[in-house]
Amino acid sequence: MEKGKQRRAVLVGCNYPNTKNELHGCINDVVAMKEVLIKRFGFEPSGIELLTDDAPGPGSSLVMPTGANIKAALKRMVDGAEAGDVLFFHYSGHGTRIPSMKPGRPFRQDEAIVPTDFNLITDLDFRQLVNCLPKGTSFTILSDSCHSGGLIDKEKEQIGPSSSIIENNDKNCFSNPKTIPFQSIIEYLSSLTSINTSDIGTHLLEFFGADASIRFQLPLHELELFESLKPHDEGILLSGCQANETSADMNPVEGGGKAYGAFSDAVQRVLKENSGPLSNRQVVMMARKVLEEKRFHQHPCLYCSDDNAEAKLLWQPNEDQSC
Image: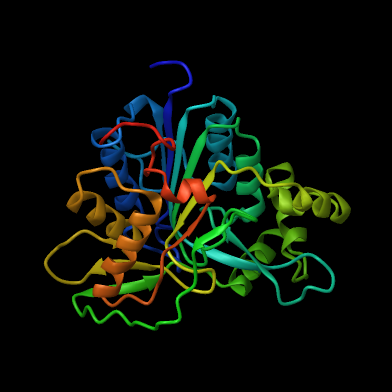
């Protein structure tokens, strides 16, 4: 492949099998996306890394989606990027919100995804990855998880909150929210560390050490300095819902259909029904319409620069190509 024109992806599906947090459609989501990346967007299979927590066997992932493994895969992808490259991260699994660490801001919450080992990856980790990209690189994140709005810290909101309330009335599917409450995460981590505190950073640093999120690694003054830096414009976030909403994991109860994430499925439908190039804004608005028609109570959002909002999904701005 031409230097500087690589297409690379990291796809992560977490079903948390045999736990009280079990989901059903997350692995199906990323396996389906892998096929779309290859057939529609020209990704080479060798350029796609798949991390899933299914049982070992033919076609299963060789790497479990722990926090350290996910961050290592993303770092490899980002470290090897050059101007003109197209990078993609699709996450399907649980999300959560954590209290801000800053004094005097008790009501602010930050977004995070929940890998299989509960070693949270936060919005600041994604901001750090985007800031490490060479200018002219495109890094698209599609997060089908709860509270995924704002998952790249300080990224500009293009399509944001909606005030409408819709409830899913599909009686043929059982729906699970893709969220693990903060208190449940604290209780689980406390069982690992045997430390009696509600400070999540203490638990994560104690158990995961250097593999814990940068949000908990940096002293407060360095954290404030990092957050004050001007963000880069290469990041594009397509979130499955608003920061205060949950995303649905759908498990058909009749007919033997496949389980799926509502947002991942909506994006797949949009791409299937529209063969030509679509902008990031178009994909999110069309996915919103699909979910609204199916009466889901979640509103996909778009966070990116003005230019990237109108850029073609997984194509560089102004690049004259078709799917």
